[in-house]
Amino acid sequence: MKHRAAISLLFLAFISACGEDEPLIEGTAGSGGQASAGSGSGGVAGTSAAGSAGDGGSSGHVTGGTGAGGSAGTSAGAGGAGGAGTGGTAGAGGSVAEPRLFVSMTDFATATELVALKLDGSKTAGFQLDDPDTVVTVSAGRAFALERTKSRVHPLDDDGNQMGTIDLSSAVPAASSQNPHDVVIASGTTPLKAYVPLYDSGHLAVLDMSTGTLAKTIDLTGYADSADTDGGVEPDYAWFDSIRNRLWFTLARIDLGTITAPDYQLACTGKSLLMAIDVSNDSFVDLNGSAPGEGLELLHVAPTSVHYSESDDTLYVLSSGCFQNGASGRSALGVNAIKLSDLSQKEALSVAGDVFYSTLLWNPEVTLVQSFAGFTEEWHQWKSSETALGMLVDFVPGSATSDGQGMVYGVDTVSDGTTTTFQVVGVNPTSGARKVITEDPFTSGLGYTSGSTYRP
Image 1 (tube, rainbow, N blue to C red):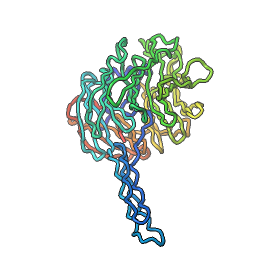
Image 2: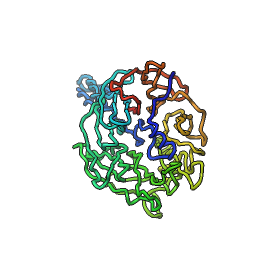
Image 3: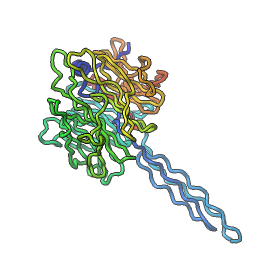
């Protein structure tokens, strides 16, 4: 019998009933755009009678492709006695980092085990951290292990091994909790910067990646909604826009103080915001024109998943919504599409009812949308050109993530009643065709699969 990975009942009950403090599946990569490095350039052609060898291509970034070979030198001009030009030498190839799939297991109480795999199933790294809420996030081709409870960031090497620790537990000294939610590299900054949304303390931590230290924090608490009794702004879902040189992120601005017995429903108290920072000087970008403040009010409330589509320069924001007084169904939920060129908005996906929509797994042909009706998990196919959900599918693996190129990965828990096997699988999101990559990569016995992340 195959079933979904078990999930902490207390955690799921809180999320599915209250409508949000963060999405259930945190295994997907950070919603910021992921930059891939350029290949080494080819050698320059030799010129004139005794054409000199072409220069080798410059080395690519760690994720760069191999440099192209140099073209042959040109032959000597007419009337000269020189020999044929020599061929240019091959460009020096950039070192290539193969893709990695990170999968994790937790006991929801004491620790998380992280495993890095090649797509052929071979294991390249594995370690355990003493934080049960640890996830892997990816930005600019680099992976980080993020301890959310203990507020620590661990940069990972190409194979997935730890390269150090950046402690953010005192990033905002007055805050009782930081709760880092992502790591986003701002490519091209000097020194290289990375931004970390601190969900509980309402700041952005700015990291100096050249030294692996906290450089400063940016205070976001001034953007709290006056009707929000908990005073939090809940920054999340950051990504770097290299064209505009901006860091984009959301402020959920949800009132967690309204999630009380007996219904544990998140009340509608204000609007969630889209924000942007100019990474050259960390100043806020005014997105709302003559209106007060700088944030753009989103059509929906409580973002749970974000994807930027480069092909149409559009940001797609899935939100779980909130409850109006006395309402049995949610309001202000669905997918909000924002055209970044002019910041125009439209409702790309319209949904209703008391269903918690939590995750977008984006792929070129069809996107998968995860939802929870109580304790029942469902996945639907959806095309961004349509305003309604497509067919219900049952082939999505547990703790699923997407490579964004037509494949979904995850971990299925398979049991015959006596023996339990954890299968790491790849699934075509259109046809449902699946392949087993490997079985039982974990060694800790912590019990519950908790996330998957793809690093290109």
